[in-house]
Image 1 (cartoon, helix red, strand yellow):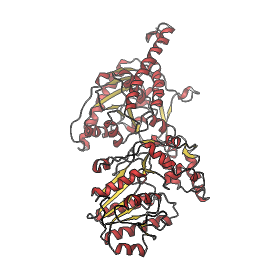
Image 2 (image 1 turned 30 degrees about the vertical axis):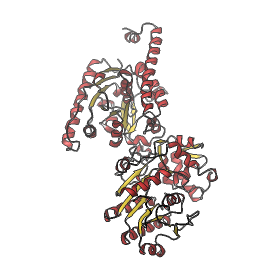
Image 3 (image 1 turned 180 degrees about the vertical axis):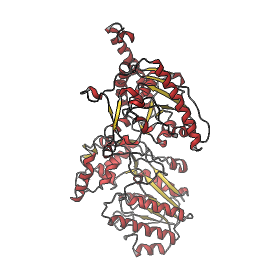
Image 4 (image 1 turned 90 degrees about the vertical axis):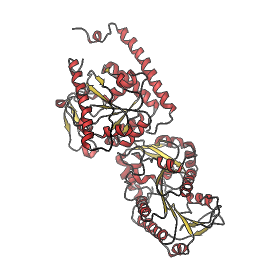
Amino acid sequence: MSPRAKDNAVVAICGAAGHFGRLLVRRLHRSQPVVAIDDRPFLQRPADVAHRQSELKSRHTRNLFRRGGIHTVIYIGGCSQFVLGDGEQFSFAIENFARLLEYCDRYNVSRLLVLSAGDVYGARPGNSQFLSENAPLLAPEFSAFRDIDIMAQTFLWKRPDIQTLVLRPAHIAGAIRSAFVRYLHLSPVPMLLGYDPMVQLIHEEDLVDAILLALQSGRRGVYNVAGAGCLPLSQLVQMLGKTAIQVPHVLAKPALRHMNKLRMLEFHPAYVDYLRYVCMVDDAGIRADLGYRPKRSLAESVDAIQLWGASHSGWGMP
Amino acid sequence: MPNPLHRAGFHKPNDIVADMRRFYDDASARIEYVSSGLASQGPDPFGMNLEQLRKTAITAAFFYRYYFRCEITGTENIPEGPVLLVANHAGQIPVDAVMITLALLLETTPPRLCRSLVDRWVHRLPFISKWYARVGIAIGTPENAKRLLQLGAAILTFPEGMAGVQKNIFEAYRLKPFGSGFVRLAMSQNIPIVPVSVVGSEEQYPTLAHWRHGMHLWEMPPFPLWAHMGIPLLGILPLPVKYRIHFAEARCFAGDPDDDDEVMNRHADDTKRCIQQGIASLLQQRKNAFF
């Protein structure tokens, strides 16, 4: 289905009120009816987009699906991965997603796209430079993303008649609140002494293109998505005009644990591994199967991160 | 007994200076040739930094020529295009890998850059993991190897694995069993294997024993205790052994890369035998480890 072809097949976007959700809504709402599902207020909502301000597991959302007419569901609820692990946010995200799968199963949804993250593979010393879709998901257990990804894969095999897609993008470059972007906006940027892993970025607009392309393709499956090229973390920090502070890795995790307790920084201590080891995705699959090509250069992706701006810099809670 | 410098062909101090200058110019030109070729391919996905590679290669080239006095034979056996170099290994400080890499860079025409594959524990080490990535060394996973071969690279691998680097001086030049992963890799990518025999590497750090206690706390394998490590400052330098490296005739293994282990092990043993024969022949040629 072309996004230009106006029809009545409603697209429900879960997590639409965030920055990336709004971006996706703006690209879709002129061509087809869009329902935004998010318990956060939807600022600058286009007039023709309905907003259901409720949780996925609420009866209001269930009623929306029960009435029928929702053809496509896009789940982007977790762009801000690595929720802190007191367990509550984790189970909250999993419960909501389980309910969404139930709606897709029961109420004639034809297409489901889940936006996962390249981080689900986990940053480990034995990682290949580029991890294919077949690599095991070894992200630390606090990451709700890994469980959501596995649940989506189970659903993919359980309902072969539904076009289920799981996209695992590299670090999204844009004005989003992902852990990586928030990390890059710390000032100074902490890096691990003696480590400088390669990192990959994907421009937010490229990711929107990839999502639309994947939906139109009619294919099912799991795909990694990355932007153009990759670069060392130190070079990225330098391109952003930031100063790096070098921290010995043996101190980084305990320091982060204490800073979390004092509410000075909102990063899980296990995130340190992503600053130590490489965790990049191999997007050969989506390039070969769907003909995806990133349109924005690496420099444009770096510029997109800068947009988030000086207003969020500093060591306080972003 | 003639002076070692005379034996090496240097009769006047000026000879050494002139030779060093000639060698520097030649090595620089060769490194420049390789760097410009790599630069035209765009940024390296493994994080290799050409400037760092250039500096490291030039520094190491002087060790190659004047410290280890490498003697290379059989470079004509290295085919063009992607190739898998399989060598015997000694020591946790991979001087032998550096010497083989420099042999390809300085002795072949056109010069080639060889990318080494290392064990995954190396990635845990601060500074070293970063430096390795900058000079083009990658973690030895099949996916990394395939990607590098697809880029047309020559890859250096040591199939003895960790057992190879944990040998002591009393087991010198007795090869440990080879893993068969390299055979599967070569078969699946349809590329030739060049067995490489290295002599000199076992004596550079004459390892008497390994310190095993508590190394797991540092996430490291057993640490070698070598004979001259007690000498202040100089103890960290390898001994000035003479390196002899022989590249044997390239061999292609046809067959199914998913075949049984027995078949793969046969090919791996065949390669091991070839390397062992090369080592025996090189050992016969030398009087002692230093000349």
